Image (cartoon, rainbow, N blue to C red; front, side):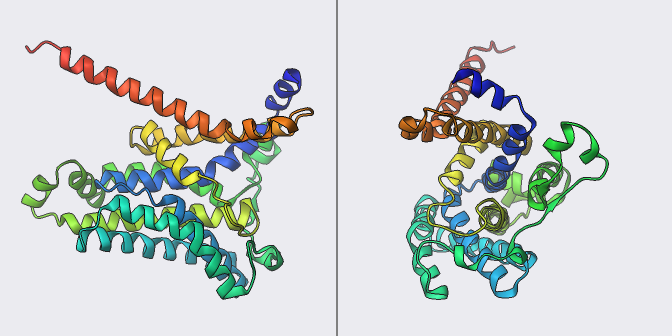
Length: 317
């Protein structure tokens, strides 16, 4: 059994699966990064992904265009972000409670919305058609390279976009005036306000961008990964993304590597469950990604505590 696992891991298709699984987690992790930079904890990512996955698929089905589906998912994500911002910044509701409400709406409200709009219950399998699924791309030249082409070529458009966004977000946060204002608001809102920066406006912008990125993750899930919407399809990826953001120290590149770690854990779960003789351990196998999440957060907390202790013990010159 162990030999089967090793053989299946050291194959190009396994690395291909890791990248494929990582993409939706990475979108959500970047969503967590941008909101956290503005000092807003967006724990509603799980619900956002569920809701945008549903509406993205429905928009694509109604228009028979995957592009409109993706844009519709982003639009719904922005609305959800602004709604959370309104309740938190205007009505002074705790942002954590707003996030919990969105998660509950994503878990239960989407079933009602699906039935209201389509008459279906539980999933949209009967509505799937090729026009509403996100296409894949074969990268010229790279797709001809043995092994490397099998790993990097043939992914969905949004998969490549997720990794491109990592570097675009870094440039945005550290090289643009708007990005610098968002960071200033998150680090010291009083100082930012004293130089004329609108703290509330920057927080609205950040949480709207967070919703748009969560929308891309939701669209990826329903219009490519699962090829349709079904109850529970996000399967904790929104919460895993929060862990990836924390382990990545709130930076886009760090969040990418953390997301790849969780993508590896998900891929391992898939591979192990497919091995002979593992059916009886199904519940233990399902725990793999979540155990990795907990272990990763423990190591992250230990590293932060160790650095804080070193900082306290550092002699004053």
